Image 1 (cartoon, rainbow, N blue to C red):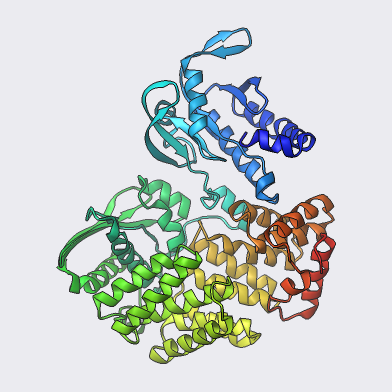
Image 2: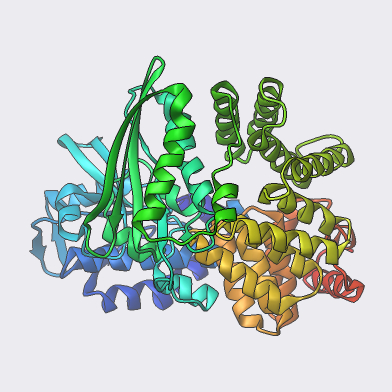
Length: 573
């Protein structure tokens, strides 16, 4: 247990009660169900032996995930968390106890595990790699305290965004089955240049290809949020196919040197592991746009994708002529994805620089529009009204430049919803999806608009589509899913979704306030008070009325219910 002494000093009785409850209701049955036996309790720790490494890893992962979910509604300084170390080796049995160097090694592995994490020795990893529905990160060789030599250490990937197909179905009610049309995941291309500064270059090429293919109506293309989790990791295409629910993956590499670039690409069938198509391109930097077009065409042909003539013309219409501007855009995009105030400011600077180089670049206009939208929504700019006014002018410019480009319509839809022009916003959102049917974020934006408009069933349908296009979806997709469930009377499902959201973004006001309100609506007084306590720890000046009215809901009575729920949770009006 992490921070045991601190938590005991702050609340000895409460900490012991919660720890006892976790052991009795979670740890003991989970350990037993996976072939384990508790050897001894050690105050802040527990020593366990298992019949198999798979049992140990499975039990540890389930316990860690359950603890993270149960503690997510508490303020950060009051959460219970654990570290776990797992090793395969011989032990000396003495009565009911076990001893030996291998027990010590397991204890040292626990010491290097991150809070809430699980670390394995190489011997243990060899027993479970590819045999359990979990992924692992290679942490390299480490020195372990009082253990001779260096030891290779692996960590279980417990990222709550990495849902298993079963977890995905439990949250969304949808199964990750193969679609009835060609389906593809474009994995991040590997940077072979040896220069870490060129990561943006490889990422930009793979994301450009992904974005272009997302416009094809006869294909399902998985979003960046889900494909980029495989960056810099060993890839098993069959497992990726299962996790993302796709029939094919596109992967490749990029090597840039001077004015020359070598790009390789290969299309692989996830069901068999066979290569469907592969090619290598040696070109100058000025030719990279043509290479990207060639790759997307080859993918479409290989998957027998049908497109109309008008669709072809729209999909492969050039959107950038300058490599220098393109470079600025993708450096900006990498900053934007950091989702920090500093990253957002740098992204806006670079997008503006790209527009100076190439006025009218739809890439740069789109990027700047979304960066400003995020900055206005998350308080990253001093003048919110000025930022939103610029977003509107950028959306108008994008639509005027090319009415067949989805980006302008999506930006406009998001803006119109905040102006309470619901029908126009819905029309704009639907137009964006018509033009880019596999853009998960545009389905999610339309889901938000539908929630604001009070169309909860339609909100559910649309956010589920967004999640299917991005099975490892960004955490903000979860709250419109929860509101869709709540609005259709499925309160327990809404609660389950918000509790999962809290494990992914525990210190987010949006999550905790909605969790407090929902617990109050369900009559869960203690849980509502806990979430309310977290809200006030995040914002001591929180006002239920001010916060609820910041959401542009069409039905004003829903706003009043929101305020009443927050007040019932114990939050100040």
